[in-house]
Length: 527
Image 1: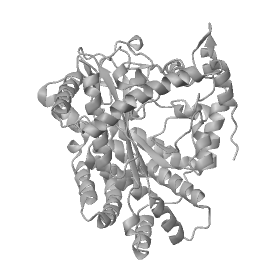
Image 2: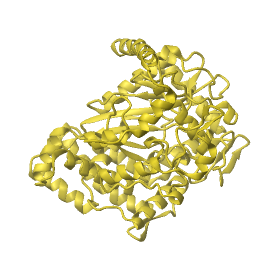
Image 3: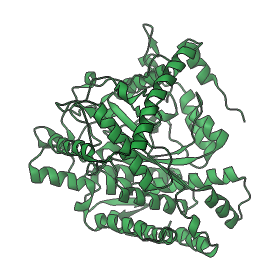
């Protein structure tokens, strides 16, 4: 990718586009489990004081009723996104009583699947669909792996960049087709070097012993309460996390050549029955167990570390939104929660991700063939499970390459991109972030995953004890932090509006849920 990046950077400089080489919008989606005062996953309702999880724009739930998800709007800068995320935290903490937000990706104490409440969204057809989809995930993959938390970063380039870049490249396609092509190129390159994110920011090298399910294997005993993997970076992204573990067996590998092929792959999986899921049943004794018995219930069931996204309208399929209005932004989904930050992510990480985003946009145009796809999957597994092994080799273009050697190559390009981005901003913050995290290449002990084990060892802590200690510190942090009255008032208003919207949805349903579901899946795309 490096030669292509150098050429594209020279093009940008030659055509005076340096001021446009920046992120247009940035947003954050952060998941956190509510833990009770005993350190168990909370079994309480989603707090009414936080509004409706179905309709609140910034505070919702993911798989479990206890798994909060905070969503910032798309904002102009990383600083604004971090600040908004912090204000959501400040609003939430006083409204969850004696519960705490668990500040790590791997869960707090669980008491088997029965301790995990599936998220509820009221009685509207939309709400029931979200709940039943989650029931299906439980039947298909088990509930335990569904309560792992992550943090997603949503990024887009500014419209002015796209028009200038298309003119510079003398591209003759339509503006939206050009944007789609560029974003899919970016996604392919993010997959090629995506192992770098868990290497640097993976923070799930240990788990509580209560996190036991069928996929857990090859973990060592740290103490009587903790299991770990010696060189792991992100067990969350490994075999014990939520993955489509049967994708090779049943052929649901998404294609990232272009938008139509990507949508076609997902659509085929959503429409193709799968015998083991048929054996679960869709409706059993009058109760839905899943939305359907197909390979995927809906598009979101396909797990990937990066997704092309378009904002959906009411009851619109994500694939239809993409086909109709194109790729609006890219969602990077491979970050563990950073337990060393009260926000779950820090500004330096966010700046680094922005540089990586632009680096991949300016990279190689080539498609990913079957052999390279195998290499990408192998590299992702190896870094997640063995990334801190100093002898680790990865696969690149059919050959073995030392992880550190490949890192040095990537960081050379990242620094070039960062310096170009810094020229527009009048400071060197992007270059500083790249140089800061390069230290984790020079010294593996500076990676998040190593720092967690080191802190546990130094304090003679179990995984639970260490993360609980951090959680208590962040409770105090938000208690002491200054609150933005305007944002707090806006969040309070959003609570009231969300509750009214949920009631309106429930009152306006004029179909049974079965009819609603049939209509939803019967929808065909039309231009």
